[in-house]
Length: 470
Image (cartoon, rainbow, N blue to C red; front, side):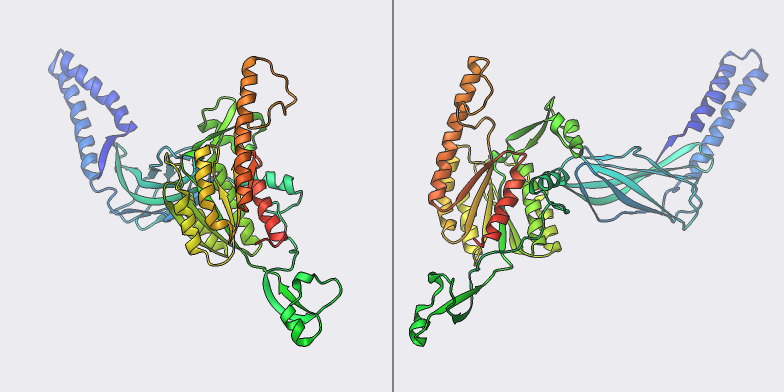
């Protein structure tokens, strides 16, 4: 729908012609003064009306073209390519446009872009820099644009659908820096290709016994047939399946605080959007997603197959493990819209799904919160279905203050500090009880700080891979 609004030139003419004309018509003492005022008003009305009529269908035929999808990182600038083509009835003095971004996106610098004179059939191209303020998938529904009438007295405005989908992914740069400092190696992910050790699990061939072979590797039936010791050899499994299981139920919404002075430069967005005062505010789910994406990127680099399952009160995503960059992008697009749900987790449905879908042994990394004793009990009951066949690792973020009593060197200033120390001890004791119960089921449970969560997840993966536990 096209609409017209007065331009600054028309407003200036209003001050120069209309106001004096009205004054002369009202206060004129003779017919000549009145006639002069009437002439000024008539000229103003005729010129503005004629320019208004000439601007009809001024923007008809103007076309805008956008890419269907734009991908970027939270807090990083991404350029949206915009193309405009003039198929209207004549030359346009200028084209000015802006996009409807919403509250989750922000334009760098100015939101309005000006193009100079655009002739018939001519194209104009420009980049529209956009910053994603939060993780997720967002839609730019429309573009609003305007041009001037033939005499520039009116601004002719219109809008058209844009339908640009923008995927904003978590910012992994701070976690990559933490990994680089933790593993003390250089590289895009702070990790190098590891040399695999161990004998593997797949049978390769039989050969004569050699000094140093383990007795467990002797094939006694072949030894009896040949009447000399025969040893089984195995080939190292180079391609393994790794699954990350993310719980996005109510426990994943727990807030995490990090002092501002210890934040990375890339975390500037937390200080703008968070409400933590002297702290940067994030959630457990954000850390889970960062850990999952980095684990997937490193597994893809190591040549392993990577899969993902997300669940809350039901399974929301299940992507079977495969290799390749395109498969990693598929998983990234699937979990980027994940939000915490205020429901209790259904571990039974998730474990049944994994037990029925996974045919070969795999590494299953669970990212969840077992702070609630009832939730921990339900998880222990359900995980027994998987722990006998697969290598299961649980990595959770340690609750604030969950340490043994008096383990800190800090002195207790008040009696309230003593009660907080005791409450933290009870949390620690309950979590250790859960860890011991999982250990009896063959499941390792790791409690990490939110800064070290990604490092623990990657460390568990490399430990299982190097020791051939998968």
